[in-house]
Amino acid sequence: MKQIESISEKEIDYSDIPETDEAFWAKAELRLPQTKKGVYLRLDPDLIDWLKRQGPGYQTRINAILRSYMETHEPR
Image (cartoon, rainbow, N blue to C red):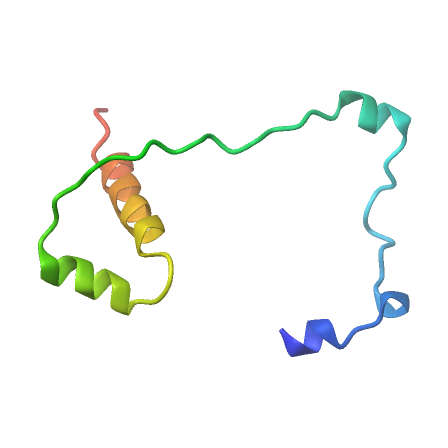
């Protein structure tokens, strides 16, 4: 991360990025992330403690774990 932060704007090579023109922006649309629903969920204390020990964002991790389970158990 420090290596990236140390690069000045003048050193960045933008040659492989296409320029955006009026046609690009005419088709552009704002897409906001879907709002999550709040739920009350009863979980074992040791499970919550373990998730919290992983660092900030334990609720996001719970969501990712449940999503992964859902996607691997979709009906075929």
